[in-house]
Amino acid sequence: MKSHLMARSVVTAAMLVTATAGALVTASPAAAIQQCQGYQLQADYGVATAPNLHVYVDDIDYCIPGPGGNLFFPVTISKYVGNSGWQVVATGQGSATYACTGGRFLYTTSVTTAQNKPAFYCG
Image (cartoon, rainbow, N blue to C red; front, top):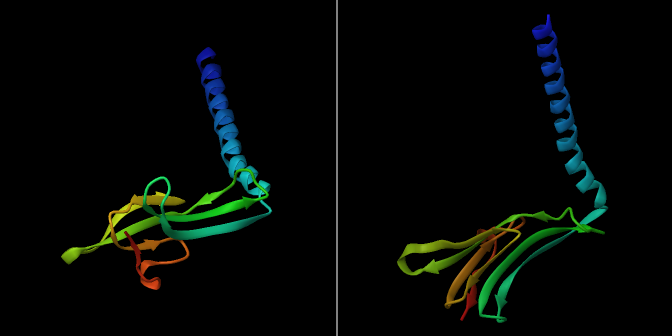
């Protein structure tokens, strides 16, 4: 009788923990979304000189009015390497940078692809 009661208590406790964890997991994204009344997309690329010469690409949806809730999209930077063609040299979530050693570069963001944009130069 005691072991049956103990087993029932363990099962009940496990169900309670699972239900509580499930409620917390589903509440977290909802809380982040409720903070944002809108988003402002920043998708940019270019060559920067400070502090060192580098190429960069950014792709972030900023939560308005913030704070928190920002969305960081995957980005890549590719460099043209002689007879090999285009090679990915940097990737990131929201932003990526690559030290400029001269040459042609392409970038990819969530809203653009390398095929849609001309190469840009650094150095």
